[in-house]
Length: 355
Image 1 (cartoon, rainbow, N blue to C red):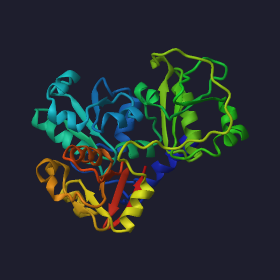
Image 2: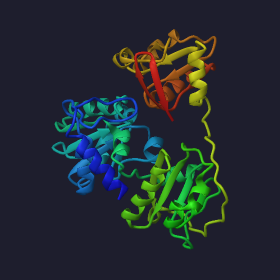
Image 3: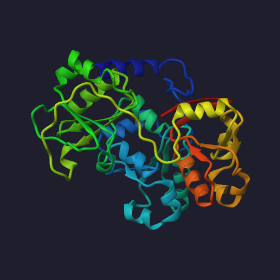
């Protein structure tokens, strides 16, 4: 019911004033750019079962982002792979006459735009971009599908409402079996009360998407931000009985060189060297105060512009390019690097970070 009420409210709002996308969400009515697909169109393609049949949707983000949660039916083809391996496109078996829609991490992310341009050069005339990407999909309260490697990587909270049934249990994750009614009640609130709102929660699906969506809706109402579902039938390992659990806790695990958002913000505030590796046009629209721009496309040739003395903090719009820049510079002998893996939106020198 909450889904219906919120969707109805959004629909009514869309009849009112037209405003543009902001750093925190999407306005009621959005002026689309040429070759852009709207939230409503994407949702319609999904609900009508066209994705993967009549329409090909491609996730241009790195594979680890895709595995953590993607639009159901979407294929993974990171921009880096597309640039280096033309055979990767052939493996997708998409006809040149097919409608292909690219997306990534929202309007600040250019991976999807660059991917669509490359596809057009390859002869795909109907290559479009879903600019709103994952944030827009979430804003429309649609489910994201996780992949098995994400669960196997660990540090995930698994929610299964089929109490008493065998489920996914691994040493690297925490599995909770709780009925939907208990989840909505005092038991669910108590169980999740101490859990970080940034914790990745994956709901187990058992063939009933209506039930999955109901659980995801409840978790959204509790303000959890990183939500996805995973079909139990896709799990290749053995199932087991869920262990008894008390109140849940979670802490992020950062990769070598990765810096927490608060530490990055502190670096900006203290005047550290901030390296922005986005395209120059994106940098010009907004960036962290004092940031120096060196687009990732120029990094291999121009890396000597980056100082080897003092700390260097790398940023982009989504974390994909900052991680790649970290890898390139590390291979060049730099050991003074940190990178931010998060969604960044800037207006002028005012930036927001969403992990």
